[in-house]
Structure formats: C-alpha cells, structure tokens
Image (cartoon, rainbow, N blue to C red; front, side, top):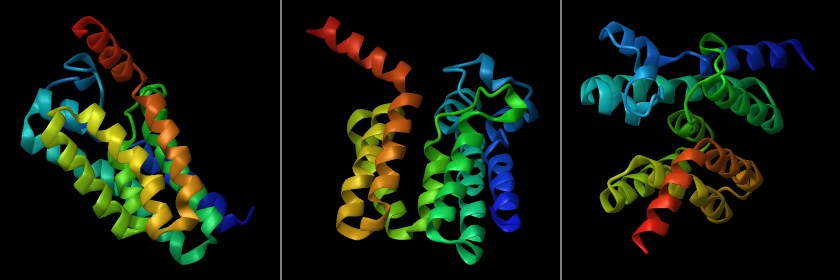
Length: 190
C-alpha cells in the first residue's frame, strides 16, 4: 500500500465520519439522534429541523463523499479510488465520532457517484426525485434509486457495475428497519 493511498483512505473515512446532521442539529439546540427517525441524514434533518437545515445537511453529506473521491481520481488507480469511495461510505454509516452509529449512506453515495460519473449521479438523483413524487417517502425512493445504479452502469459505465451492486446491498442493509416496516404495512393492508 502506497503512502498516498493510505493517507487518502484515512482522510476519506474521517471525511465520511463528519456527522453534519448532528452538528447542524446541535446548532439548532437539538440532538437529531433523539428526534424523528433518530437518523443523522437529510430526511430526518428536514423532518426535525426544517428544509433549510436539511439542505445544509444534504450538501455536507454529499461533499464528504465527493471530495475524497475526486481527489483520489487524480492520484490513484480505479480500484484504489473505489476503495476510497467505500471508506467515505463506511465513515458515514459507522462514524468514529458517534460510537459508530451513523446514517444510511444515500447522500454520501450520491457524492461518490457524482465524483465517479456525473451522468450516473444525475440519473440516480432524477430517479430518486421521481420516486419521491410517487411514494412521498425517502426510504423506498432511496432504495429504488440505489438498486437501479447497477442497471444504469450496464448502459453507461460497465466498469462500475460490480461496485454499485455492492452499494445496492449496503443500501438494503442500512434500510433494513424501513424494509421491515414497509413489509408489515403491506401485510396488514392486505
């Protein structure tokens, strides 16, 4: 492992670990992990703190995925860049500053995707927004958009197909509580 790769790996994890939702919540006098869904991400920030604060959280979470990956693209091989991307995502999901209890990784994943392939990032974001229009909920929209990325890769960025298949599995895992709730609602509705 080169010194550059090791340094960027650590930098990426630490960037990913910055809990923007927690920080912005504290600036508003609230612990976001004790309100709403108790998640530190965009959807709960909007629910608990309002749109303006939620958009600041969203921008921070996107940037912490984007910045390390865009830097890594200038110095490292594709495989190493993808490792840097995973480090940012792991940092967001398991932040050292919050006893490894973080967010679901969707906005950070968007930042990673915009750095790897702006086209994929924009298509994924448009799909998410379209799903929000239909479902009116962030969790199913996030899952559908993330799971669509391997298919979009087949059409536009085949070299990232396996990587995004892995991210899709991570999204399913981080949304496991939401999936159980949706499943229970479906059973009780039928």
